[in-house]
Structure formats: structure tokens, C-alpha cells
Length: 390
Image (cartoon, rainbow, N blue to C red):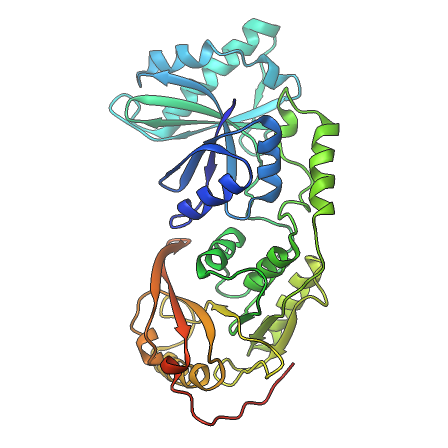
């Protein structure tokens, strides 16, 4: 059974491992920013189509014991590369890792590239073209602890690119990170989902896709596995048709608030691009005043509010979080809530007891996802009347 590696962001590894098991993978082993697993070729195609948490899927083809230039060259040269080049005219090599023998990735990549070129030239008498800018196929070598493992790209361009983000706000979350945050929040996929700081709408769109059971990769034009020798069009079309048949109508209230008008317009454009018009409700409203109304049953609030590394000056943020805490305790009793932040200082102004917290990375920024249960006792809710917007 083929072996694969799924790449992702820091903090998502265990969630991705769970997702891969759900999608049919075996021998699942989380690593740093990656998960190793095994599955059939067809299951790997299904994973590419469905995964919400992986950014890339690579297929393992060669393991080289040793890290010297000679051993890596001989190990790569000895593999039968010809089947991968029957549909490939141009390729590129990525190299990850260094050691005493391979002191920079460029040198390591050159060794692997030379071995593949020599292999194909010996087999066909022709030299394949190399182009880092627009390759048909990407081959990645990963050097770690004296072993060089070589992979062939299976998924293609980053899987976080769902194709619906026409534009973005000032501090966007990548789609796979948004999906990971939603999963870590504990949302059941069925109850009400509210984002008080919806920005360009990424959390809302990912939540709606989860509720509708829509495969995240349906809008992608092509995956790299079409270049692999085992690929059969009719089998992939059957996998895709099955995914389309499993989609359901929206069955939860998915609600977003955003105070800035032009940012809300971006959210509307992205929602339309995702084909989710009518499935997500939006309102231009300040988060410190936003309420959903009594007809919306308590569910989950999942939001990425402004924090120090992002938007807003410190005085504005202090006022925002104090007022936000009052709104939450007044109008969101019995809700679950998960908020992103860089550290807990601002969240202390909410005057709420946190339940759990988890570490993630948003690009280069270390962030926390802090969870709360807004119980009646926690909120100490008085006789506060709220005005509904929906």
C-alpha cells in the first residue's frame, strides 16, 4: 500500500491525523507540521478532494539510507522514474533539510535533479526539462537524521486554496487554519455558528461547507495525481460524483457580523464565489453590540478578533474587549465560544473564565485559541433585553 505525507501548519497535526483516519487512511503518525499515513491510490485521491486541514499531499517513492552526495545520487538514480514521466514534460525538485554532508538545500536539490535527469536519459535517450516556475510535476526530497526520503507531489498547489477567496481583509486566516480552528472549537457542525468579527468571511464559509458536507476540493481544476501512472479518469470521476451526491442543504444558522462596510462587501463577494449565497447571514454591526435574536438557538461563537499583532491601537483594543465581555455575558448565555489571540492579556478584560486553550500559528505569528463555556453562572446574566437582527 502506498505511503504518503500530509503537510499542514503547526497546531493542526493531531486534528489532521483524526481527519485522515475518518477518510480511510491507516498507519497514521503525526509529526511536526505533517502527518505520515498509508492508503490506496483511490483513497489518497479522496483525501485530496475532502481534506480541510492538509495543505499538501506527497507520495513517498524512495528511501535512501545515508546522507552523502553519492548515496543520495545512487539511491535516486536506482528508482524507476520513467512511469512518472510518461505524462510529464517539465519537472522541478524541492529539497528540505541539511546535515554535515548536504549543507544547503540548493546543493541537495541539484543532486536529486541530476539523478532523475540521468535516469530518464538512460531510459529514453532524452533529457527531461527542469523549470521551477511552471513544472508539470514536483519531486520533493526530505533529509532528516541521515535518511533522505523522496516524494512525488500528489495534490498540487496548496490545498488551502479553495478557490472562493476573491479578496481578503487586513488579517486573513488561511482556509485550512480556519477549518482547524473550527474543528478545535468543538462545534458539532449542526448548531448555530456565529462569527462576531467575520472579516472576509473565511470562518463562515468553512463552517457552511462543513454543515453542507461539501468536499473542500470540488472547485479545483486539477490535482497532481493525474500525472501518476495509476491514475484512471473514470475512477476519479466516480470519487468526485460520490462527493457531489453527499452534499446536503444548509441546516444551521451561520451568522457573521463585521463593522467595516467595505470588508463586509468582501465577505459577500467571497460567499458568492463559494456558491453559498442564502446559506450565510451577514450584518454590518459592531461586535460589542451584535446580537442574534431569541429565534436563534445557542450554539458556537468562533471569532478572530483584533489583537496586538494585527489591527488597532492598544487603547481601542482595551475598550473593545471590555465592552465585548459585557455583550457576551448579556446576550450569549449558554453559548460556547472560541477566540483567537496572541496572548491572554486582552482576553482577561472579558471577565470570563476560560475552559481550554490551544496553540496554533497564523503565518509567522504564534496564536492561541481560547475556549469558553458561557454558562448562566459564568455570565451572571441580569435582566438584559436584546434586539435581534435576524
